[in-house]
Length: 190
Ligand SMILES: C[S@@+](CC[C@H](N)C(=O)[O-])C[C@H]1O[C@@H](n2cnc3c(N)ncnc32)[C@H](O)[C@@H]1O
Image 1: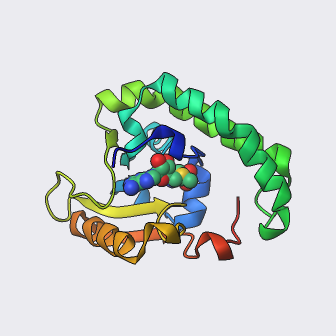
Image 2: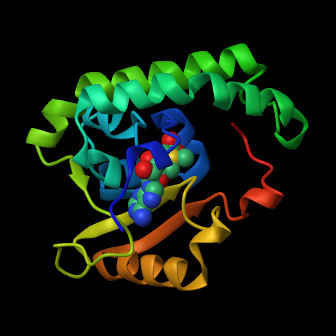
């Protein structure tokens, strides 16, 4: 079935959050990193700024910058409303309130949008939908990351997750996933 942009809720995090989620230390920062389901996060852009090597994979990279930007604006109010209704399910230590959350998320996604076309030309944003086979040799990357995608959506089914992680482990020497609870149990740092 064709992947539709209106089935996606684009929501992007930044480098500082990725470092905390995945325990990325100074030596990790120099490694070849792949991020699966990276969406409109600015991790790739900010890593480039500090001399890092990240390739981001996501089905939304088949769409234009304008289409992704439009979808971000479409979902923004709904996502913030849902966050408000579910505030008690989250840990408010890193980010103190909803205003700060919205500010951080929108800043990250704006950075992504500014970098998107250049990053595509440089092969840093690659259209790919898990669990499809990736056009890479075994162990092409040192670290594979998945933030807020794998394990969260139980509706995708057990086989989807196993096949996706198996393919990630083929092209990456190690894989780190965050969070490791599904949406029903999700208590995370936003
Ligand atoms: C909640 S966003 C997380 C974005 C980013 N990783 C972050 O934490 O800021 C989930 C992402 O998973 C992507 N996604 C959905 N289906 C996918 C699939 N089959 N393979 C890879 N990524 C997928 C979506 O397009 C979306 O960008």
